[in-house]
Length: 174
Image (cartoon, rainbow, N blue to C red; front, side, top):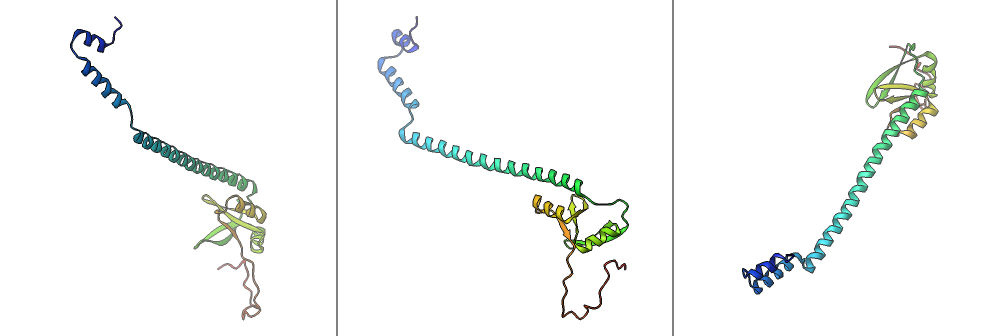
C-alpha cells in the first residue's frame, strides 16, 4: 500500500520504464541550478546584502542626526529660558539688524547701555528675541551654531575720521 504513484502506474501498465526514467531526469534537471547560475545568484544576494547594510547605515545616521538636532533644540530652549533677561516692563526701543531686516526689542535703560557696551546680546529663538549675557550667547553659539546671535559692534576709533569729534549719542530718538 505504501507504493509511490510512479510504482503504482508502472504496475498497472499505464507507463513504461523509459517514460518513468525520463520524468525522473526532467525533474532532477528542473531542481538542479547550473553552477554558473549559482555563482550569479550568490553574487546578487551578496551585493543586495551589502547594499542593505549601506542603506541601513545611512538611515541610522539620518535618524541620529535628527535626534541630535532635537536634543540641541530642547537644550537651547531650556538654556534660553534660564538665562533670558527680557523685562516685560521695558520701555526703551532698541533697534538691531537681523539679516537685511531691522528689528526692534524693548529693553530697560540699563539693558540698553549694556547692549551698547557689548555686555549683552540678543538671540533669536523661534518667533521671539531674547536678551542674554555675552557668556550665555557664546554658549548658545556652541550649542547651536546656526542660531542668530546679535552682539552690538564695538566702536572702532579712526584717527583719520573727519567727524571723530562729533559723536552721535546712542540713545538718539528720531
